[in-house]
Image (tube, rainbow, N blue to C red; front, side, top):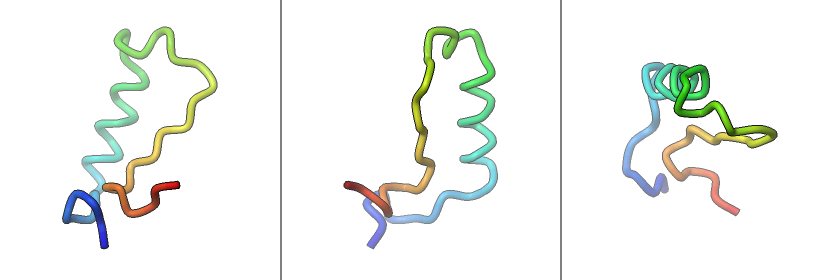
Length: 42
């Protein structure tokens, strides 16, 4: 089961990339960002 109830689509991944390329993410380094709707959680 997927925690958020739906499989992420291409626009969800694109939005994550756009965020990481923006000034809002300027201090983020060395992080992994999973865009999977909560399907894979440790």
